Image 1 (spheres, rainbow, N blue to C red):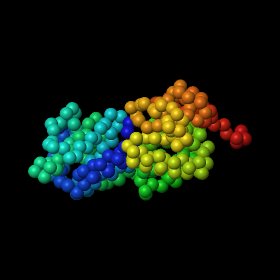
Image 2 (tube, rainbow, N blue to C red; image 1 turned 135 degrees about the horizontal axis):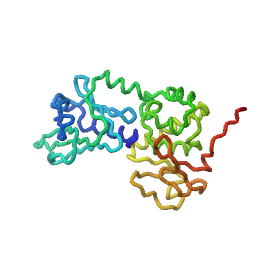
Image 3 (tube, rainbow, N blue to C red; image 1 turned 90 degrees about the horizontal axis):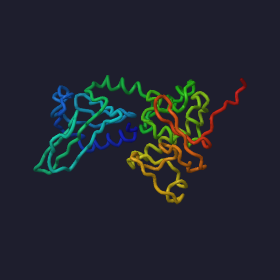
Image 4 (cartoon, rainbow, N blue to C red; image 1 turned 180 degrees about the vertical axis):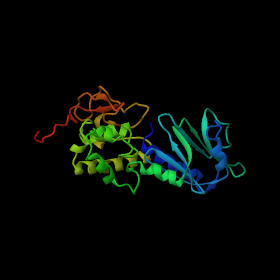
Length: 284
């Protein structure tokens, strides 16, 4: 499932391509046809992301709410010679076409979990149910902390709860916990506020870098392939990581074999030496 940095990159791309322009809106697949007809010919104002939720804003305070889910893709093509026929199950197509001026662009949405026309009130309700997004300048990390510090649930699960923290997926979850030497099963309420703020600040930097590069890189300079003299990672997720999808491979820091298990129906990865099991010092 795409993580928050992907949605923020997509929002910027959609805004840059269609912002301020009247667009043709269609639903070749047919599942969004009625809403597409209402929007066809309207101007796109901008696109905005909140965690894993994407909102394409149209004039008249109308928004297309998109959640890509596990398999969704929203591909933007700018500067093409002509509009091609839709390929596959295209739920939504946005297009501008001025062939005389050489200005042709389109974006096709496929496989999304959510594609719905919503009002501003409905959009605001979705945002209100979401936790703070580290990529938004108006995010308040204390909102997430209030949930974490009261919870018996493992921090590895809380980081993936979009009502606690918006935009973090399995890669950022695994890598953040490693970078802060924290076992995934440590109860949220055992964290100190200073630990949480350090994690939040780290997420802000890591995810901003993800937006810039279009991939997730989490290793520190001393652990890059060049610094360590090791081959670069080869994985369809891209990027250099410490533990994500490295089960059985040696930790870049201590050499221990990376482990994996299932937490709340998702694989979780950690190093048993760098992220030891948490044991409370409190008197029982």
